[in-house]
Image (cartoon, rainbow, N blue to C red; front, side):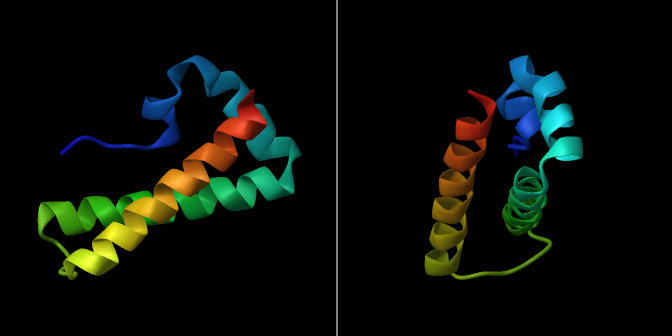
Length: 75
């Protein structure tokens, strides 16, 4: 199962991601939340956690929304 962390999603923005994590508290909070949700989805996909389809769909929608917000910071 592919990882969807920001390092893999936006490799061209690695330096900017680091700078924003250090200098922008709102970005850092959203970054941390994104990674928590991404890891939870990964655990579900790998069978380490069990969840119903509706919950997984909600998590994936939330992840996509957060990714869009994070990308707005990066542009």
